[in-house]
Structure formats: structure tokens, C-alpha cells
Image (cartoon, rainbow, N blue to C red; front, top):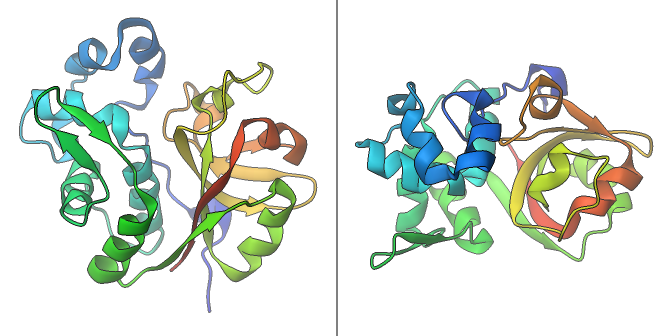
Length: 208
């Protein structure tokens, strides 16, 4: 099977304007994302829909990158709507809170809609990831969103998803949908020991 080289996998942020991460952190997603001039590119029907969803779609940004690697471009919030129909997100109408990404329904969603094989992985040691990527093309890894600041200690592990495109015993390369600058967005690189500090030992292995 031909695998696209890691350096050819396109990067997409979970915000339509990729450099909005610091504004989101400073002002909150609901306020900051209403200033995103490119919001319509998300596939959202309204600015409200974009502001509610964009902070929750790191997983859909990862999927958008996977699809783009094989030549398909699908907006993130269109993907989120479709994934929600499978139970991949649960929306609480009362307070507009969103639960997800829920892994098992996501696996069904990508198989049914795109013919992509994916598998929920739990109890994954960081050291297992290089071997996993010899069998699967990508690993969507659950990490702390503070992975964008590798010099800091994360408050917890998990809660955010990044797309691991290559891994060896020396180097992990990944796309981070909420990186705050070029170095922490596309082709971010960490030593395995640093990646491990943020990694929640679970994720989704994806073959295309």
C-alpha cells in the first residue's frame, strides 16, 4: 500500500484562521472565534454554530488532514455534523455543551462515510507508537492541549487530539490543530520522552 510521506500531509487548524489560538486562550473560544474572518470556510451555517463547535473539533481537524492526504477536502464543521449523526458527538441543547470526540462511533463514521479503516487503541505506551505506525498510516493521539508548550508540565493528560504522522525511537512528528505558531502547528516535533508527558495512552489508529 502506498503511504503519503509525512511531509506531504496537509495541515489544518481547528480554527479557520490558524493563528487564533492565543486569542482563544486569552478571551475564550466563544468570544475570540466570533472575530474569525474566515469562519465560513468551516462549513458552519452561522457564526454562532462556528463559535460553539470550533473549540471541540480537534478530531475533525485531524480527519480533515487525513482526507486531504488522499485528495479530499471536507470542511471541519460539515465533518462534525456528519460524525454527530453516528454518535461521535453528543450535543446538550440546553447549554450548548458538546461531548466528544467519542472514539467508537467515530470509527463507524469514517468506515461508512469514507471507507477508512480505524481502530480504537487503549493502554498504548508511547514506545508502542512507532511500531503501530508501520501497520497504520496515522495515529490520532489523545494528549494535553498544552503540548504546544513542551517546556511546561501539563496540568493533565488527554482532552485534545493531534495527528501523529511519523514516529521513531528518537522523534515524533505530528500536526497539532490548536498549535499557536508555525513550529507547534504543522510538523511539530518532540522527543518520545517529551511526547509521553502529554500523552493519555489512548487514541485511534487510522489506515487510508
